[in-house]
Image (tube, rainbow, N blue to C red):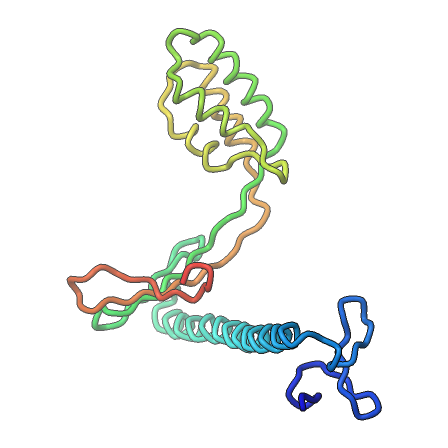
Length: 213
């Protein structure tokens, strides 16, 4: 007979195993459909493994940064310099060229009120360029200033506007307003791992993210 020893989170009441439902009400296991008990077991089993794996990944990440930090400390001691640029982007490669670790620091950028000034200047340009403005340019501008569900503008499209070479003084002023509107409000450090079979082969990422595996 199924009992609390084999069923996760079961409660023994007067010698009979019970399970609590979503509202906390205890139900005798004998009154629960077999498939519901099985689903309960399977979900607990999977999530328990996921919790353990998440803890392992967290420890691995900590050890990774600790190991790289220790290596950089040795470099700093020997040369008085550290590996990487001011943003902390670094690449570490094995001696045989078959393994690589990349550390990248990505800034999180938000925009101040100058962005609305830029939008007004761009709109002026588009109105005057009615005949000359290409549809794709209008599409980029529309996508750039459309907000998502979180009320955020499309950053990638905003940055695309900055790459366009347009000589109109108002456009240049708008691009300067965008640059002035940029605010770095935080950053996140990413570590990625790569391998390849030989030095002629392409690098292949070592996937840890389940969503991308």
